[in-house]
Image (tube, rainbow, N blue to C red):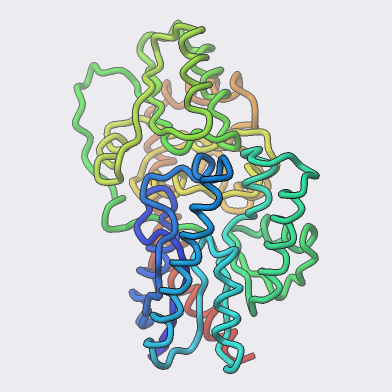
Length: 381
């Protein structure tokens, strides 16, 4: 049996980044023994942008990292034999410790970079100014960390190209591995709503720039005279206050700004929605991503609209598996929503086709099987 160590300070059951738990589950479904060497650095509901603000917070974080790494070393030494090490996301710093612990053996090390740390922190969330000392430090930490791994996993082929050009990594050191959904939670469910209820359009996720909530609000403003269409925005994060302020200014009666829900509660909202929304931001990052919310909607057999990008064009047929809308264009999004609202047969068709595609290509069993083959091929090098 293939035995793999899943290593790092990743959050095991984080509802917002489910990738680690789902890849572990997918490997186990494919007969791989996975042993976890994990000391979570971030708390379950912690927003990282707030945690690193101020010198005292930074010092506390450094001390916390040292404590977690000491614990990881002791755990790692008790694991016994395994064939490969996977550094769980986000493992930008964990890769250094993993390489040190494996300096005297030939175990292959796989870093699940997933997305670019630099792009997320600097280009998207603006945590530090581009060109600043911190921006340069983050760039070189990530670049060197990737170079220390035998293989780097990223979410899509778009990210393979990005890491190749931005960090100078060879393409044969990079592999795209798509996200999946929790099949035990996200599956087609019966809706519980009145036949005369409003047509509900659902967005859920982190309120960050790449998700393009401002364009969803633009779409809601375009459709404000359609009293039978309601928007529900579920989540929180960096832009929550700005979103609240804009909604107060516009006084939109067709928008409900809701709190964050745990996955067990969220599935009920998805089931009762008529249409789900993906991401629409104008950033380059948006064009490379395949987000969890898209995968969850496909798993639950829900029609979805998301951004038109090279990545989504590679994965889906527009108008068949889902509807693609131009990035950063609230007016176009409003037209797509209205089209699906007025065509219930089309909604059912794309929901069914999208769900079939999910089962064929994106399920945790399929993605786990792909990761297993990646590990086997790497071990044979």
